Image (cartoon, rainbow over all chains, first blue to last red):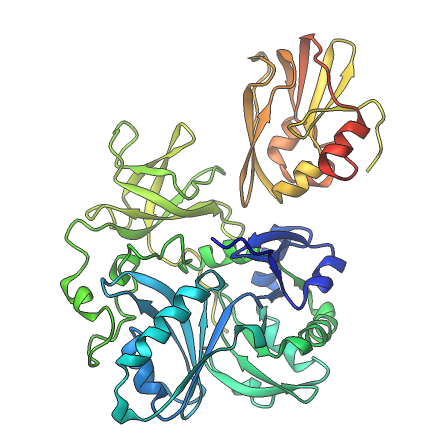
Length: 378
Length: 125
C-alpha cells in the first residue's frame, strides 16, 4: 500500500540482539519469532511471554465532548464505561462494514485512548477526523490526536504475568493486585507514566503497558529480568496469531473487514443499538441479508491444518463451496487442527461435519463452539 | 551443526548427500528457520517414482506450508519415519536426524556447492 521503507519498533535493536526473526507486518519490521514459535506459544499458556506491540496505533480523545464524540463515531456506548475501564469496540462504515476493531480505554473523566490495528492506522485516523463534524456541539469541545508515534506498547501475557510485573524493578504498579480484567490504572516506570491495563489478545491472563517509546527498552529489560526465573520468554507475532486463534478472537483482514457486518462475525452485541445515532447504525438495523455468511469455529483430526483461503464444502463429494477458511493452524495447545471460517447460513450449528479442500485433499472438519481454548479461572 | 562438506544444495533450499546411487535429501537450516516450527510432514512412501523438479511432499509449520521438490529423478527407497513422528527434528537437526527421504537416482543433476548455496541465502547454509 505504501512504498515507504519499513518502520521499526523502538525495541528493534533489543529484538535483533535476542536473535529474533523479523517479518513485515503492516509496514513494520516486527519479530515473528525468537527461536521457536511453539515454545513461545506454550510459555503464554503455562508461564508468561513478553510481546512488543509498538506497531499498534493509538488515538487520544480528550475534552468535555469526548464521550459523546466516541458514541457517534464508534459502534459501542463508550460514554457508559467508567474511568479505568476498557471496552472492545468497532469502527463501522456507513454500510455497516468494519473499518477496524478497537480497544477503548477511559483514562480520565474526559480522556479516552483508542487503540487500533497497525494496518488500519490511516483509515481509522481518516474516519475519526471525518466524524468530528458529526459530534454534537452541545456536548462540549474535544481534541482528537494520533499519538501512535509517541506510544510504545509492551504486553506481558500468561499466568505468571502479575507476579512478574510485581517483581519488575522500577515499575510502580500500586493497585495491580486488585486490577480486574479489562481495567486499567495509571502506573509509572522509573518516573515515566505507564498505562497498565489487564487486557490482551491471547486468551490468557495478562497485561498491556503503554508508555513513551524512549522508555520502552528499559522497561522491556526490567520485565525480562524479573520474568526470567518465572519462565518468561520474548514472543513474536507467530505465537500471537496461534494464541488468539485458540481463543477464538477475530483478526482484522481475516475474520473482519469492510465487507463484513459485526453480526456475521459473532460480534452482534458489540454495537449498542440502544444509543442514539452512530455511523453504520441504519445498515446494522437492515442487517447483512438473509444469505450472508457467518463465522464458525471448525476442528479437525490429524495434523493437517486448513489455512486462510481454503474452501469449505458441505460434504466430501460436493463441488459447490459453502464457505471459506479465514484463519487456521494446528493448535499447539489442543494438538488438533482448528480454523475459523465463514459459511453459508444453515451450516453454522455446532457438530456439523463439513469438508475442507486442503491443497487438493478433502478432510473432514466439525463445526464447534468458540473459543477453542478457554483458560481455567483461578 | 556439523559442517558436512559432502553436501550439495538446490535453489529450493534442500540438501543432497550422495552415497553411491542413493541420495539422502533434507531441507537446509535456512529453510527450516524460515518456516518456523515444523509440525507436519507429508513425504512420499518408499517405492514412489519421483522426477526432478516436481513437488513430492509438504512441510508444514504453524505459520506456513513449504513444498518438497524432488532434486533428482529416481525411486524413493526410504522415508524417515522418525521425522514423520517428530517433525521438530527438522528444526533441531535439519542436516542430520531431520533428513526426509532417500532416493535411488538414475542421473544426478548439477547441484550447488556450499559456497554457491551460501551466496544464494546471503549467509552460510
